Image: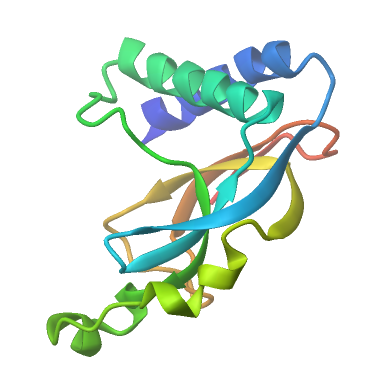
Amino acid sequence: MKRAIDALLESKVKIEDILQGKDLVLQFLGVSHFNNQVVFAKIAEDPSKATLKEITDTVKNTFKDKELFKVVNNSSIPHLTLMNMESAPDLQEQGVIIYPSLYRTFRKHYFGDETVSRLDLCSMDKARQPDGYYHTEASIFIGHSLKTFRDS
C-alpha cells in the first residue's frame, strides 16, 4: 500500500503540470446506462473531458511504471451515477432492470458542473464507509484546494 500511496503522490505533481494552476470543471449533460443496471449522467464532450482523460492516463501510467497496475480493460467511461441496481441485489437477481422510459426525458438534461478537487485511492476489498463510499486509503487534492494529502 505504501508504494501505491507513493505513486499517487508522484501523480499529483504530474496532474498539477497538466492543470497549470486551473481547476478541472466537468459539465454533466445527458444520460446513458450500463446494461439497464446503472443510469448515469454523461460528461459533456468538451476540453475538460480531454483533460480528465489525460489525467487518468497519467495516473494509470504512473502506477504501471511502478508495477502496481495492469491495464486489463482500457474502456472505462467516466460518469456520475444517478441510479444503480447494485443497491437492490434481490431485484437484480430477479432480472429487474431500470427501464429507459424512467429517464428518457433526461436524454439532453444539463445536470450542472462539478469541480474535481480530489482523487482517492480506494480499496475494493475493504468494507465500505458508513456513507456507502469505498474505503479510502489515501487522497490527493488538486486544483485550488488548500489540502495536499490525506493518509487514512
